[in-house]
Image (cartoon, rainbow, N blue to C red):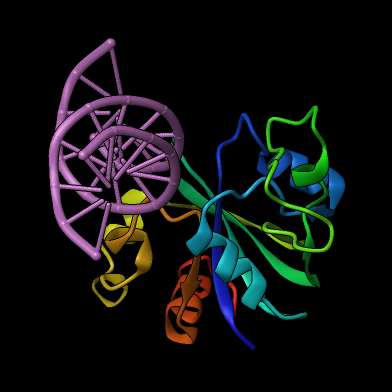
Length: 149
DNA sequence: GCCAACGTTGGC
DNA sequence: GCCAACGTTGGC
């Protein structure tokens, strides 16, 4: 099993949206490194939901319920996520389905930064990457901080 | 709203 | 293939 962290701005997709939907396609990612991480996800992998921009914080835990498949928005010429170079035969962008396991008590970026054992998190080293890997240890530390074992 | 960090684009 | 210019992300 692998562990990941995905970011979302609340205006784009909030934890409330996720709580309502329970299952969502993690689409619209248009960055190659993030795309590669989405493609590497396997069913059952754990995924932390992170709110970026205002009040940055980890807010939930999800799991991969369907591994990545082509993001349909890349073929939709009316979508702002349309990619003229992508074809159904050669798709460029991929999305998994994520299922929310539970919302977590808010764990702020400010708090995360103070935890010495988390200092190597990708979140700090490559803060702009919107889909990033976590080590098992990082994941367990974070779940511990949220009071979940 | 500012700005640092980073990714992408395009001219050469 | 290099790199300057530009656009975007995201914390503050």
